[in-house]
Length: 353
Image (cartoon, rainbow, N blue to C red):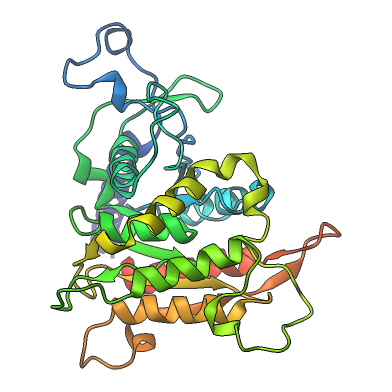
């Protein structure tokens, strides 16, 4: 009996030792670290200053007493077209690190500090920015007050372990192009209102997905109805929608300029050749507003694009969920972020982990 107990204790100590080593390695890989004196005074020649962006929010690691620490990192990329006070960042910070997941937030619409203010952004530049930001999250040098100077790292190293939450039409579009060349562990698309041209369809001319979806989105931004509502005599009493105030906010200038450029260049739109089921994908759309059906249809068409033919309907492979609303303590009606974080985690646990 004593021999059996001794053997059991040895096995337990061995397993505990392995868990501690794994967690230490994960901490070294993902947690912010102070730059060494040599690194701060003698940067690597291959790490050009142009690659440094000071808008990556400090990654938040799980608490030391978390029961299970996951190897993936949740990265939130939000569109500037949403109101700044409606950001999901705080809710995600409160939920995911205690659940064992590292969390970071990035803003791909802001250019690097040394870029020209007159230089317009493009889908290609946003895709490059997203690639650099994700690659930098693996080795961050924290210099305080959310001012972060990323060090060098291999682009695909971190993105392969990243679950990207792309909230908004432009981040959703850019993240799908990103997947054509670099990996992700999983992708959540929120309000993917811009539908890329289908590059898998062998047609000489445009199939109209991008053009029609751009027209509808521009209409909503300018206070006009999307095409599907043109014949409607009445609309719901709620005259608000998630992007109704986008044109009145100064921080939305770059994304609005990109939409104008995409509209002008629609005949030379870049097709999306991404194969279906490349990574686990979840599609969410904002509900309970006047254009809810328009948001839903865009979400369903996006899910269908990422569904393998002959494998059942899109909802068997790519879930589409409506984001409910809640009364935010007298501040008005806002997204139910408890619901959002729980559904995203359930999907992650079932499809990614």
